[in-house]
Length: 307
Image 1 (cartoon, one colour):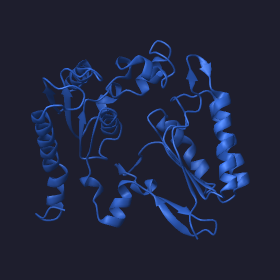
Image 2 (cartoon, one colour):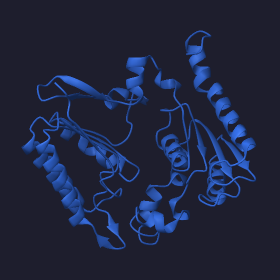
Image 3 (cartoon, one colour):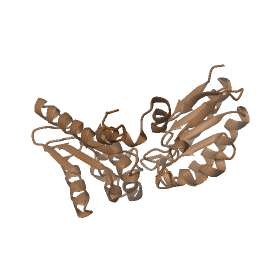
Image 4 (tube, one colour):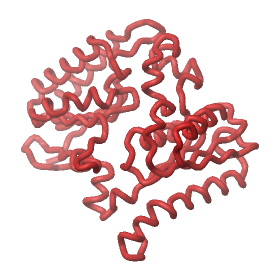
């Protein structure tokens, strides 16, 4: 029997646009989702980040979310729902409801990575998906899926990214120390209050003056104290998208906190790398980072043979 899966993301319940509430639009979205779930006899719904638009969403957003859950299960009683926290969500707020909602055996919420005995609770991140007959047909998984099925050690994993990928790398390292061995963040947004205001205002409830809490909750700058793993920062001096001062402010903060990290400036490069020598140097440093971290630990664990 085939598994019928509905993959969604970025609901952003509670979002306002230039001071105008979007409740009506979100209600229409939820109504469409419910109709689709019922019409297609969906077995599982995935919400891959950002159920809510802010860490402290309005009560109307919470009410709409819970109404969706009740009505979805009324229409399809065996429906499973898996929710992963996004950069707009509050991990703690989502995780607080997980034990109660998971008791229903139909909703699994992962706001953030929790720990058991000082180590990431990887088993919590693996969720079996069942069809209408109750048979397991798929798994929702990330690092632990690789660990169980492809013999990848979770302790030998790093991440890197440019621009928003760099922002994601910083948030992952700062907020979830110990999950990744190392990270390389390139031309990264470190504080959304210093980024493109028209773009950011559509996401974070207006300007920093309108909602400073959302900007602070979404910016790596304010979580820098969490850095415990190897970090490589790379930024172009004449970057016209994510300005160089973004990187410099984070560097200053990391120095104030006494953190170990590496920072590389590319003097004639903009957002991303335009020159071949910058691309070559950037790749060389990232490879060196992996050799000194994830590959080195892998070699030790296998008695001298790299995995």
